[in-house]
Image 1 (tube, one colour):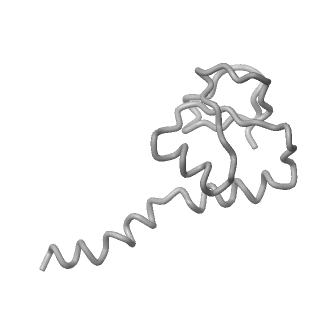
Image 2 (tube, one colour):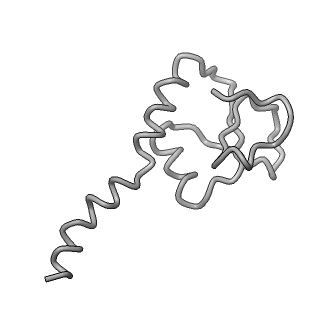
Length: 91
């Protein structure tokens, strides 16, 4: 009985933990201000968050550890504690 219950609830649990809503809201805010030459750097995005970001927003991020060829105007961070000090302003 428990196996059937978990099997039926698993898709709902996965959807509830999804980043879909977060990235869709991000895409809604970025589309009006995004320029063709823009790039986005990232701090602390994991193996599941990075591809999901690309899927929902069509934005390819560049980890901050890998120096981008151009200076990015956007930074996405997993949480506030991973934000590097400097010029970044929350969006």
